[in-house]
Image (cartoon, rainbow, N blue to C red; front, side, top):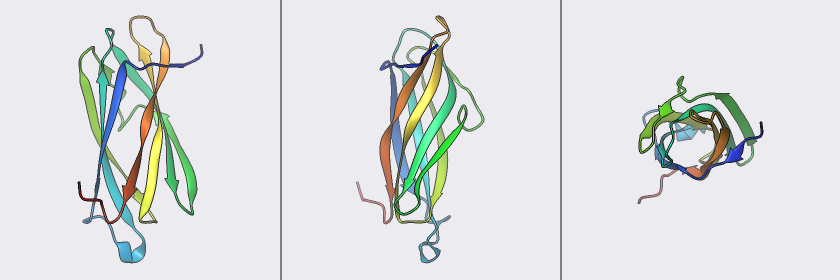
Length: 128
């Protein structure tokens, strides 16, 4: 069965620089990101898989695949939001991440994908 993209799942990302885990003098930049996944649809879904594209300027793109997120494959009911925090280390002061999550509709058993919006991680962090 081919996956399709569903727009009833909304994904938002918040990032922050971790000065306590970073050492810019040694080209070590650590960031955290919080992912918000909202089920705007009418049926329960389960997050099954993640695929990340982590881009650092001279190091290129690294692909990261795996089941679920942070050791979980959460069920998200209609109108609910699931969120989690994770992190990454860069060896450059700037990088970008994007990707997609694979879900299953628990009523129809249909598989579908939702893109993770591209976000930038940079040092020094921009003041909002």
